[in-house]
Image (cartoon, rainbow, N blue to C red; front, side, top):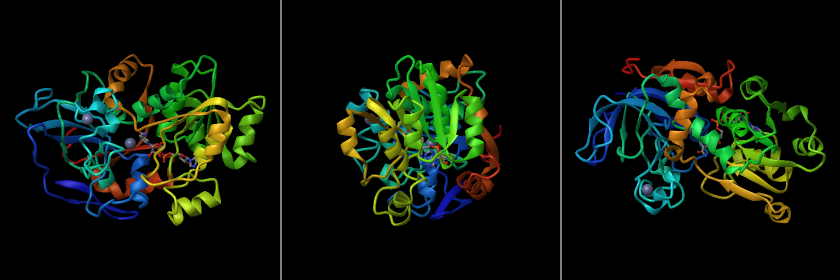
Length: 384
Ligand SMILES: NC(=O)c1ccc[n+]([C@@H]2O[C@H](COP(=O)([O-])OP(=O)(O)OC[C@H]3O[C@@H](n4cnc5c(N)ncnc54)[C@H](O)[C@@H]3O)[C@@H](O)[C@H]2O)c1
Ligand SMILES: [Zn+2]
Ligand SMILES: [Zn+2]
């Protein structure tokens, strides 16, 4: 089958790989119909995630048709068109039982922090991903969810990660009616977090990035204010000033480990890897939130350590909440929001490429060329 193949930092290609096989009675094999490239894939692509092995297939946001099921799969059947949450979850460990599907204790034998994630290095379990014609889906009674009749597959693929992650960023922030919410990052996740902040009653939503076309997009899509941090003398001072020197009630980090904007962070976090990525947006979030406010982190950081201003967290009495999104927990609510038109996630898809052009997809998305917000890859065998 054709699959994305990681050859080393900034080198990916589409090549032939063996077909995935059922290895466990609860596995399914799906024929992929859509597969997105995510900001999380860029951390792998840029060589910032430990134990990203040459030969791995990335892709944790995909839909597909069930082609084959193991003997213990009862919740999906051959021929079902499913969306597959990015977290691989067993559904029965103590964490899954609490709805912490991103922290499954069984699906990632390499670690006790994050659970398994498709196509996300051996630090997230070493499972191959969905940027391929076919993918193996473990615990198929838990994750894959039949796409409701009439739902556009482009909306469905956005429900595997971007919609639940943006929504959970706002949910974890504990937004109170009238709150001022600042979202760092106008990528797909930040855009969705800004949009969802209104659903929780925000009174003012501000997005910060340095890519003008994304700021323009989020201004319209999420009906919010949006500012280029390169045009602000200091984003923290700007946020304080615009909130009567109080600070934002809530700051959301939707940037993660590859933040721009601070040379020292960039050198230590991205160039020399002395810390697990540059935490510039997180510093800004902690310093711009008001005393007693909430910082909600969905931006991804590596498994090792970052320097963060923990003294400010303590002295300001900040609550920090963070996690990988728990996609399965949120799906029922978010499917409703898409079906009723409250959320229109497919509007974020700007690029549609055949899987054969996966290298171009990564290049365009990572360099933010051609006004790219969200690229989707279509395998040759997708059939739709
Ligand atoms: N927790 C989860 O479940 C989860 C799920 C999906 C993605 N993520 C993470 O969320 C983050 C965003 O994902 P995405 O797909 O939107 O990625 P993206 O790379 O498309 O977007 C990131 C945006 O941040 C901007 N940026 C860079 N430095 C900044 C700074 N200092 N301040 C403000 N903005 C800055 C970039 O210009 C870019 O537009 C990534 O770290 C990704 O790994 C987390
Ligand atoms: Zn993703
Ligand atoms: Zn589990």
